Amino acid sequence: MHSEIKTLQLNEPFRIAHGTSATRQVLRISDGTHVTEAPFVPYYGEDPAQTLAMLNQAVLPEKLPRTAALALNLLRHDLIGHATGQKLSAHALTKLGPSDRAAPPGCRSFSIPDDLDVFADKVRDISQQFRVLKLKLGSGDLGLDLAAVSVARYAAPEAALILDVNGGWGMHEAALMIEKLAHYSPALIEQPIHHRHGIEAWEELRASIPGNSPPLFADESVQTTADVAALAPFIDGVNLKLLKCGSFDAAVAMIATAREHSLQILLGCMIETSLGTTAAAHLAPWADWIDLDGHFYLANDDFTGIQYDETGQLLMPDRPGIGAIPR
Ligand SMILES: [Mg+2]
Image (cartoon, rainbow, N blue to C red; front, side, top):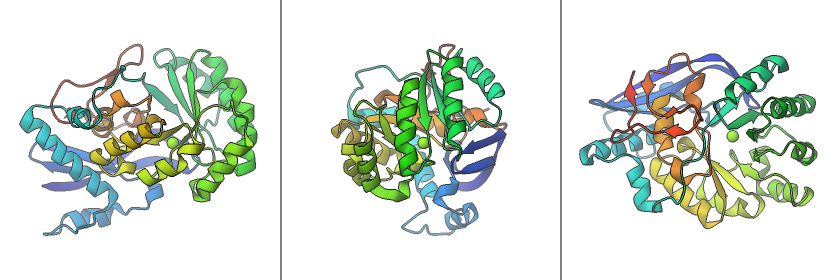
């Protein structure tokens, strides 16, 4: 088994409420021709060098860092998949049962804009292929957030708009913005308030907005199945990602819990290569929305896996295990 860190170069800096990135790092673990990946995400504060040193020890510690645990879990699933000739999704199928619908349409994300004209052109261009667009808000300037949504709505009148605030609004701002943005009929609003405020803040927010407000989804506020259950009365859906869940198995369990609470599921990813987004995409049939475009932002995506057709529909590779292969 071999572990290494790969640095991802972004095509252009990606700005969200947490900050701006020009590069990101992922952990790669390989065993022969089997390779898996897990991203390092600034807000978890994991030190890549420390994780790598831990993996290079003769005996692995019982409690592994988040990325190491995920990459090893995916490696186990990939090995089993190749041994049995089954795709990664087969494991989810045994736990969740067949999905009663097609995979949701593909989505593309837009970083907080600095130039609204450039942004409008980009939205117009990408909406030719993708019917779901995710706009990053929480710029710190409510006027810019409103303008971005307005520009996108006029540039792509038919698109479903997912508004992801990454916790960038204060409590009062959130109630105000949710009401104002309802005018643009967003498909959903994700993480309007910061996760540090806890469940009480979600309860308060829900009580302070009209009943017919756009659906509210929690992302950073949901880290465990206990969070899903506790937040369920105040939200309409959850954003689940492999890294957040910690393993493919835990993600499957989180989907089951979300469904028990009648919550919609947005399947997300981090900025990661096609190796990472393809692993997550095996859960797409059980999601209501997918946001699996992390690899589009990279200048050095060294894997090929999921694709989107000309209507933005997700195409899975027809190979066992994860199914992504080196370029
Ligand atoms: Mg999010």
